[in-house]
Amino acid sequence: MSTLQDAPPEAPRRLSLPVATLIGLLALAAALGVGHLIAGFVGYTASPFIAVANYVIDHSPTAVVKWAERTLGTWDKPVLKLGLGVVLVLFALVAGQLSRRTPRAGQVLVVVLGAAGVAAVYVRSDLGQVSLLAPVAALVAGLAVFTFLHRLALPVDVVGERGFDRRKFLRAGVGVAAGSGIAAVVGQVAGTSKNAEDSRAAVGPLVPARTAPPLPADADFAKLGSPPFLTPNADFYRIDTALVVPQIRTEDWSLKIHGMVDREVTFSYADIRNRPLVERRVTLTCVSNEVGGPLISNATWLGVDLVDLLDEAGVRPDAEQMFATSVDGWTCGTPANVALDPDRGAMLAIGMNGEPLPVEHGFPARIVIPGLYGYVSATKWVESLEFTRWDARQAYWLSRGWAEQAPIKTESRIDTPHGFAGVTAGKVRLAGTAWAQHTGIAKVEVRLDQGPWQPATLAAEVSKDTWRMWWIELDVPKGTHQASVRATDQDGYTQTENRADPVPDGATGWHSVTLDAR
Image (cartoon, rainbow, N blue to C red; front, side, top):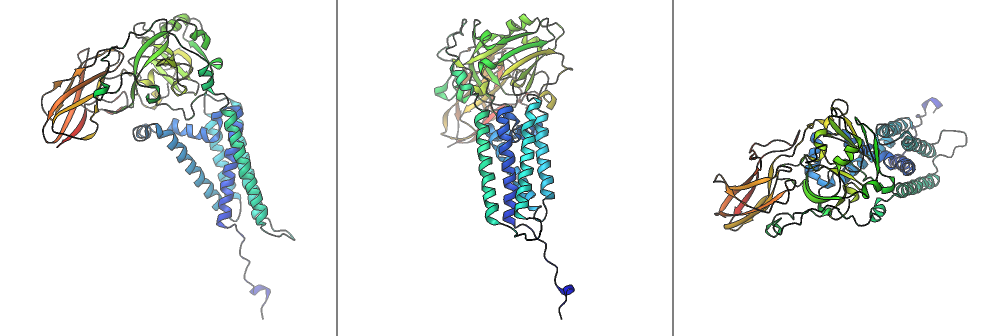
């Protein structure tokens, strides 16, 4: 005879895998949507997703940063966003799966993830305390939605409880998804309403009072395979830490010069725009550029001599560095003596290749200093120049193991043929680029295998601050051969064969290509 004691215990109730997964994903969507909505009004980069991505950029090991630049190029930031999105989805899935019987584990994970967003916003120097509203709201929204949906799908046993109401749960889920999407869209619209492109278009023509000399006809050998002397704005290399390109209107921008100066001065865009503008051609180079790499470009810059602005502030003789800060919080340390050298040609630039600076290249204004790698000389979206000592402030890349002093090294590159190239045996034309900014290129030599170095034909020198093109014809017999290039600058230095990593102060070595002649 069966008794109550003989009855099998009731199996513990738990959520199905699909329902648990959906709860985690909807809680994530709610958190991101609400966070993005609030960020649209308190600071676009305060969105938890963007803040965490920025934190990853700022704290990635140098080796990882180099790999991303070398492998992904300008796709590094989209890939980061995609990767972060995948991680968040996996986090949400785990939160849901660990909460099939009780919401406690999932709630803890939601709080941990939300706290990470709060911390990522808190450490940003370019965001104020009010920006913390965005990640805090995201945390609250994610926790509330997770708890609500879990309770709806797995109600507490009470007398008369009907159990899981699938329709009610689905209606709630659809509402959360729709609300999250709307919140994200509203936040996106609000956060990007200050469109810098409209402000840029309103600047109008920029006319230099001092124009650069006309370009000679043989400034490049583009028809023979070298790059064009002037890099189109759309093709100009871009390396920076800005996950979201700052949208700064001219009427909202100003530049403050302060620190170890006799008097603090602040300039508006109109102050700069109304000064006599100077036009100067300068080649910029990224310190991360590998031997033969693409991270070098040349443009005609338009702006004012930086030394004139600094003279108005009266920089003190014991100042060692010009500590520049971008509106996105990125910092750059330039040797003060270089910035103050009237022969250097340092500029506060507001124009590039005949038009106002493109937004992604620093509109409304950026620093351009010839002869130094970009991480110590080329602050985009600049808003502050503080004069100080090296031991008082440490710039972004200096604190990550890069050098304090970073003059550009004499280098050269074969642009065509590129890499491992199939060619016809006989006369083979090679063309390329050489640079030694602020020193100038004296000669370029090319050799085949271990043969003698042969002088290449150089383009006309436009400026010691710009790259110089070259070309040569080699007699290449059938078979596989290696062509190498080296440059000598106008100080008499011939670039070394020894390969050096870009860290800490730029790569060295001869660039070579393989020619498969048939």
